[in-house]
Length: 221
Image 1: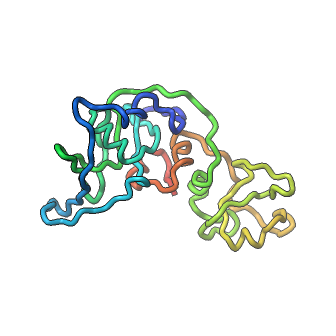
Image 2: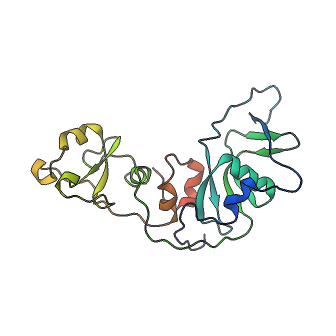
Image 3: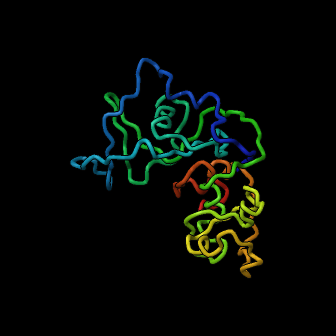
């Protein structure tokens, strides 16, 4: 695996606009999506996939993670020959157009290397914070449902990676606007700002496909 540099979401220059560009003399017109089970597609009912919500991991030619694309844009890149499928849908789903078919991808890789600008700061988002804390409450270790400011905003606490943690609803309600010293609580882990291209990507993705994990450098949850 080559050395990686932090890569911002949305920084892709050429491939990001491919969904609106023609490829050859054809335009992609999806007619249906079928799942092939045990290699037998005949007679199977179509699988209706949430096209507007599903994401595909896009890798640079060097296998560094770039961003999470909408499924439709990812399929267009593959059909255009600008990307190749690294991992297909684990259920064997296939996109059918009027003239061809394409395996629904989970991870794709660009055919040509794209240079992207370096940005050291990972944006603070709810999704990124939950991934960093592995969906565990920073106070009790239970399942996190919300986020909390360790030093409350009402008492001068900043909205930063170092002052924000994942938190369960019960602890959030009990803590309210109090300081940890006033409650006798301690943080399970000292919060810090994450670094790396996989964190910049995860900051904008609420759910990461398990097939992405080997390319993200660290577990997503």
